[in-house]
Length: 188
Image 1 (cartoon, one colour):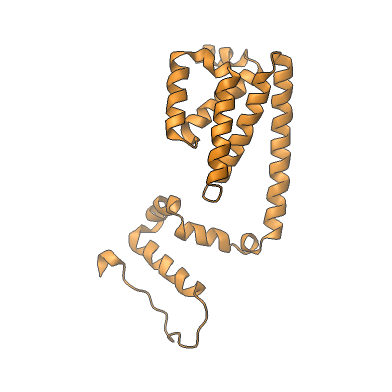
Image 2 (image 1 turned 90 degrees about the vertical axis):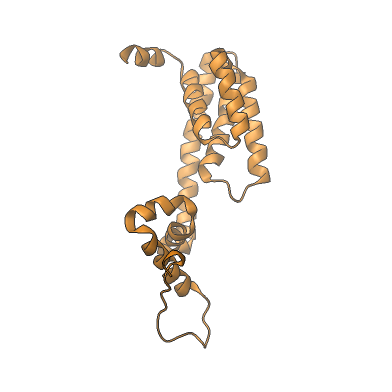
């Protein structure tokens, strides 16, 4: 294991970023077909990971995918595509020193911009400050269902969603005086 670590440590910042970014694309890429194709290509010919064409293709297809489906795309995929553009511009340079400087600058800018944007968004959004956003997504986003299942089981999840729906429905004069908790569809 230490030999693998030492081999990794001897690489330039650009090469390290290329390897780690490609691993991120394998697990979190936007297009499974594109990711599968490039993964096979890199497995057959590892030098491909250093080619600017790989990074240009990933960045371009990722940008088009985000542009076409901007609303449901997760935030980390926006960041992955931004970082892929940085890797492309760094790989495009022939000098490792210039490529490393581009990677360092891009990383600093990404972190700085991300922190400032997050700070601005949190303070300008009432739903983040009050916790409503998290409450809504923990109950409604299917990615959180496994966590909710482990914490309280199916019946608890169904009741929590029922309570949340009841509390957030628009006010009307004909609301019932008692709080309705319906049995879950599978336990009726």
